[in-house]
Image (cartoon, rainbow, N blue to C red; front, top):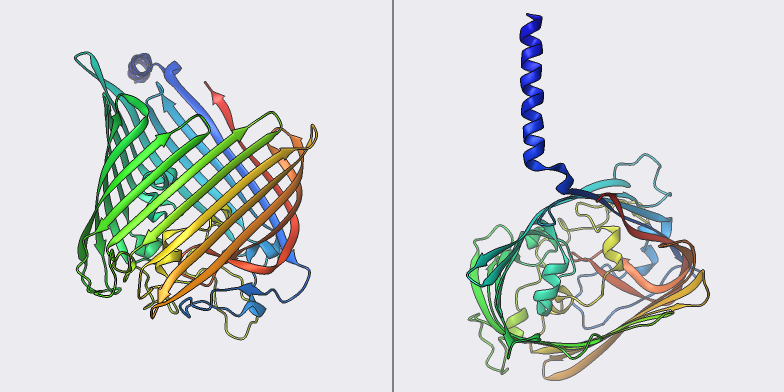
Length: 454
C-alpha cells in the first residue's frame, strides 16, 4: 500500500516537473497596481448652493439644502490590482476596489463599506505573414480607456463590460468594441452597442490616420419594451503634429428616421478636439479644447425619464431624514468623481427641440514648488448652446480644483484641497453639481505599480 502511494507521488511530482518545465515559470511576471485616495471636502457656509441651467429638464433634485455626499463625510477608496503576465503577451487582471464612504453613517454598515471587482483577460501577439506582421490585441472584461479613446464623440465616462480588440497589418488597423447594458450602467436607453473602426496611415506616416466607423446600437424606447436597432456611420481623422500636440476630428451620421423638418443636419454629430502636453523638470501641463455638435435626432430619446424616480438612484431616499447619504440601488464609484465633467449623457439630458453645440476647455497644471511641495490645479469649462423654440440659449459651466500638497515619499501626496466640483447623486448618470461657493478639505493620494516578480 505504501509503495503504491510513494509510486503515485513520484509520478505526480514528475508530471508537475514536466508541466513546470513546459510552462517555464520564468516567463511569468506578477505586479500589483495600487491606488489610494482619501478626500474630505465641506463648505464653510451651510447649506451649499448649486448653479444649475434653468433650461435643464426638471429631473434633478435641485434642493441643495438637503445635499450631502460621501466626501463630506471623509470618504476613502483603495485599489489593489493584481496583474499576472506571461511572455509579455497574455495578461490576467484582477482588480478589487474597497470603499469606505464616510465615517458618519456607522462603522459596520454594508451600505457604507463596499467591495467590487474588475476582471479582464488580454492577449497581445504577433503573427508573421510572409515579410509582414499581423498584430493582435484583444481584451475582454472591464475596460475604460480604450472606449474613451476611440469613441470620443459619445464619451460616457463610465467603466464598460464587454470586448475591445485591435488588428494591425502594415498601414491598416481595425478596431472592434462591444459594450453591454448601458441602460443599467448609466441610464441611457442603450442596451448594448457594437463599434467598428477602420484606420489607415496616410502616406506611410504613423502620425496621421484616416478612419471610417460603423456603429450598431440596440435602442430601447422605454424600459421593458421591445428593442429597436439603428446604425451610425462616421469618418475620423487623427494627426500628431509633434510629441506635444495632436488633433482629433470625428463626423458621425445617425440613421434614425425621426422627423424634424425645422432643422438641417439633425442626424449629425461631430467633434473637433485639440490636445497639448508640456513636460518640464518642475512643470506638467495638459490642455484640451474641443467643439461638439449634436443634431436633434442624434440625441433624441437617449435619455431615460421613465424610471428615474423609482429605480435609478445613487443614494438612498429615507423619508423623514433630511440628509440621506447611504448608497442607493445603484453605485456611483468614488473613483469616478475624478473623471471629466463633459460626457454624452450631459448633452442628451437636455432633450433639445433643435440642434445643440458645446465648446469645451480643460487644463491640468502641476507645479513643483520645492523638492517636496507642489501644487496641482484643474480647470474645466463648458459652454452649451441650444436652440429652444427658435430662441438661442447659452449656459456656461466652470469647475475648478486646486490641491497644494506635500509629497511624503514618491507618489504619496497629502495636502489641502479646494473645489467647486461635487458628486451629483440625484441624476441617473454619474455627473457633477457645480457649487456657487468653494468646498475646502484635505486630500491624500497615492498611485503606483509594484513589481512582485519580473
